[in-house]
Length: 438
Image (tube, rainbow, N blue to C red):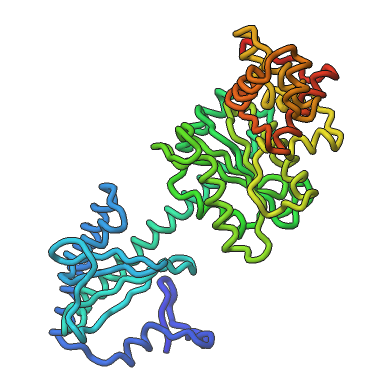
């Protein structure tokens, strides 16, 4: 075989083609002759394909999603179509949407929906005793490519948004990266309302890692947390070997009820803990809850408090549980273990005695003095009443007011210990910055 080149007087032979390469002339020579009927059918199929491409593209440009494209596809081929994959199905047929109802024994044709080695599912056609013709198969292939590109774009967009939200949470946790207004604006661009942060959750693996950020995220742990936060506005990220969750939205009206913006803080912590308990059998991660996050600038401090309270709980054999930074037992242990943070001491004293001191300041009362005398006399009513120069019945009334206003169960050893520790810290002059106007 030879070929001529323009501008040359005589032909030169081609070299032998590389192995596996078949020349077009050879293909034509070996191809079987095709009838005029076959050519007409192929031309009709190509015309249908061109029309289908135009209609599918129009639907896509008009903002149609995957169900909309599948509905259009069903109308184009006149058969019910369903996309199967990831445990779900989206279907349509020539008369409307819904899962296809095929006749018993009807053949099914599946076309993979795939792009760049990623398989998103398959388009399944059923409902007719006749198999799809060439035009139907070409249209199916075209629709499958369009849907695959759409799903791939959605996956890329979702991953980009996830990374941007993680970077935003990292900047919030590190502190000093922009003003609060700046962070709120960045959140708004990502669809997150950061103007009302609600609480912080810190999930620590059963074997805590180092405090550095060099370790890769534990995607299994992150995924377990995300599964428990369906429909809950939040920022989720990996920070210093832990999963950190900033819950957004208004708080629930009570610890046992939900609100329009999601479940209560305690419910969210229990949902995450339950999800991880199923995922990590025998070694459940710990969940630290730091409630009452009033502003973004408080997040770094709340994170440190949650990490420290989790560490104290772990030292006391309470790993793998839900631990709140409001836990007075653990906060008392932190002080006993040598915590010299005056803010922490002040908050502990306020949480234990604050409501009583505020009441005394407003009503010229003596509830704190009564509590101190009662504890100093080991709960002896007669000795306490004598020390205060009051009748026992008056003492009983004051103790009932202490229990009501201060939420102190004086028969409970834990509450008595908290009160004694707070009173002694007050005697030592620690936690003196409490304002009676609060």
